[in-house]
Image 1 (tube, one colour):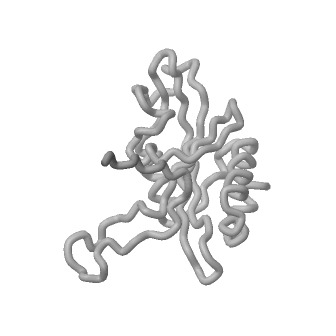
Image 2 (tube, helix red, strand yellow; image 1 turned 120 degrees about the vertical axis):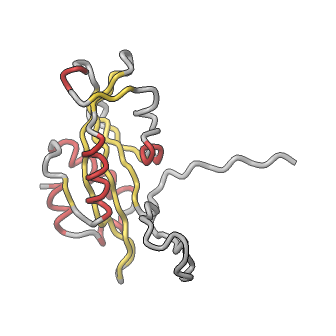
Length: 170
């Protein structure tokens, strides 16, 4: 009998598992990315979506693109925000704990794009450390992200910090 393909998950990773099961051996101290999700904002199309492929630079936006570090070398690049969203759980339930945005552009026709990989890595790290860093994003994108997070899981939105809500909604 043929094995059924697994369905693709489009949700956020809410709870992380203890990979060491408390034994304290191999893997202790390793960074867990179980509670981090990459969210893309397509600025031109007003579209927001989760693409877990971004964890390894293999998202639908990034596939087949050679990224350059000079934005001027990609004059026709379509703008995107890659937003790292870290989730956590407290006594009230799950919430959006860390949210950081990284700018990038993609020119599909030229197969070139602009992004600063160190910035993406540092922002993912900041999100994992429960930082909110969205003030550099344009107002339209912040509002799109707020709407997406709220409709994706209203309980998580309601449990999130006032700082997140204020910075996204103004």
